[in-house]
Length: 162
Image (tube, rainbow, N blue to C red; front, side, top):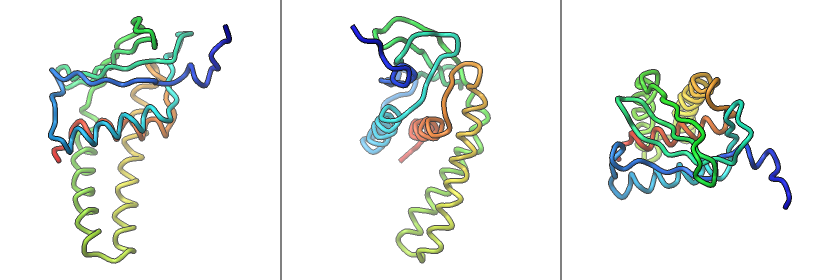
C-alpha cells in the first residue's frame, strides 16, 4: 500500500452543511452553496496542526452565531471541532452584499471601466475577509490565502438571501 502524498493529506475532500442550523435555501441559494463547496474542495490547503492525519471532511453548522467546523478524517473518525465567531465578518458580509448588488446592476448599464472599478472593490473585500479567516483560524486550522477566499465565498453563500 502506498502512502498518500502530504499535499493530498493536507486537504478537504468533503464539506457538508447542517440543515437543521443553516437551513435549506431557495434553489438559487442551494446552487450558490453547491458551487462554493465544489470550488473549495477542488483546490485547497487544509491541515489540522499537530494532527498527522488527513485528508479531511468538514461538517459546518451554526450554533449561537458561531460557525462550527466539525472536522473528521476522510473515513469519518473525529479529529476536532472548532467554533468561529462570525462577528468579525458582519460588516464585510454586508458591504460585500452591497457591492455585489452594485456589480450586477453595473453589468447591465455601466462602462467596462466602471464595472472593473466595482469589481476591484469586491475583490478587496473578499481579500480582507480571507485575511481575517487565515488569522482567526491560524492556531486551529492551517489554510492558505486562496483556500480562505474560497471559504469566505461559502460563508457568504450561507448568508446570501438571493
